Every structure is written in structure tokens, then in C-alpha cells.
Amino acid sequence: MIVDKMKKREPSAKNKNVTIDIPVGKWAKCDNCKEIIYKDVLKENLSICPNCGHYFRMHINKRLKLIIDDGTYKRFDINIETTNPLELEEYPKKLKSLREKTGLQEAVACGTGKIKGEEIVICIMDSGFLMGSMGVVVGEKITYAIEQAIEKKLPLVIFSVSGGARMQEGIISLMQMAKTTAALTKLDKAGLLYISVLTDPTYGGVTASFASLGDIILAEPGAMIGFAGQRVISQTIGETLPEGFQTSEFLLEHGFIDKIVERKDLKDTIYKLIQFHKEGK
Image (cartoon, rainbow, N blue to C red; front, side):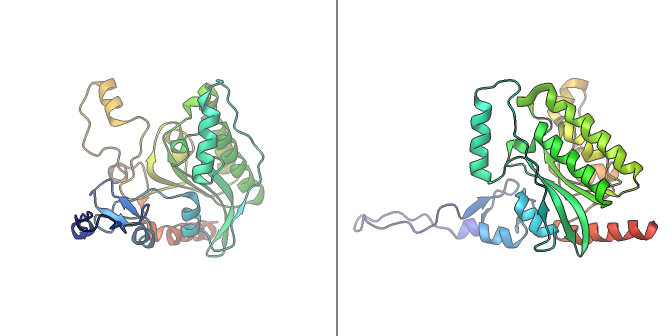
């Protein structure tokens, strides 16, 4: 392993001016196997641990590059500002900090793009922005994307990663569940394809709304998917839950999702599903 090859180097007594030449910010630690991985190696491996196969979370831009044909993505220009309905003092500061850190305006990006020449409407959530939580702006952007799919008669693909509804926006964030669900009902009546892709983790109000309503529901290997965490559920119902009951593998076995797809195969799989849907029509 890489970590075994790294030796701790300290300045010797003879030469106290020796500098450590290990670059800062070039390494990542796998949460699963605890291996230290060179970030360039991780990038080349689609953000998957080369040691144990654990899936790291992906930034929106990396996901777009993986799924969408080069130069075809066009972001929807929606001017919506995140508000502070509960008047929390720290909330605006947190949003500003996250925007500077992630380069994102909100926890989802929506637009149109092509997959092997097939035009789609695509939404991608990002866990790096308040754990992909769904507030008013996220709900409105996803609803707008659904409406655009209906207007343009295009397939819709949503990549979900979320901790659920955004607690900083209170009950208004919960209303986004109903709004996105109503919009998807219209999409279904229009006979358009909706592919939902669940990534790690997908929880709370997102799972309880648009993430679970796909015509086809795909998931990445090992993704944690559910409404509440295992400990909360166990304490609520007073029972011991099956091991790994919220993993994509367990949910596939019990019929909640349709297929587990490795990251390298997602683009091809989505393209084939779009083709099947067109031929079915």
C-alpha cells in the first residue's frame, strides 16, 4: 500500500534546515479502507478507491464531464436567490462560505446536454453544498428542469445525493417535496422518460419525493439510501435492523431500485435506456 511506502522524515541533528517535500493537499484518505491515495490517481480512477473500490462523492463538474458529451451542457439561467425565512444569523454566512469553497451557487445544477448525441435535461446534486440539502432554490430549480423537459419533450435524468430537506429553511423546504412530485406527475402524463440515479448518500425528503419516482431507478454500488438513519429507525421502532439494509445492494434485492451501475458504465446505461424508450414509443 502507498502508506507503507511513505517514511516519516525528520531533520537530522546535523542539518536542521532539511525541508519536507511532501506536497500539501495532494492526498485523500479512503473512508472505507483508510488507505492514503494520491489525488491524481483517484481522479484517473473516476473518484473510486483503487485499493477497495469505495466510491468517493463527485463534484457537479466532474459528474457532468463523466456523463455529458463535451461542450453540450447548457445551464438553465434561473435567477433565484436563497432566502433566510427563519432569519438565522449564521445561515447567510454559511452560504457565502460554501459558494467560495465549492464554486457552486447552490446544491444542484440543472440544464440540458447530450449523451452520445441524445439531448436530455439533467440535474446533478452536490453533497459538498450543505450536504445536498433541498431548500427552496433546489426545489425550484428541479421543478423548472422538469417543466423544461416537458416543454422540450426531452428525457429527464436526476443524480441525487442529499441529506434531505434543508432544516435552515424550515417547513418551506418540506413543501419542495410536494412541488417536485406534482411536476413529475405532469412529466409522467406527457409520456416522457425519467431516470433517477441514486448516489451516496440519498436520504430524507429527497428520497421521499423525486428521487424515488423515476421510471427507472439506478444506483451506484454501495450507496446509502433511505429516509432516516439506521440508528433513528431502530430507536423509533424498537427493533434490530438487518445489516446493510440501506445499501443499494440490499434495496436492489428487495425491489426498490432497478439496477446497480458502476460509475464507468453510467453514461452507456443511460444512453441505452433512452434508446429503449424511443423504440418502445
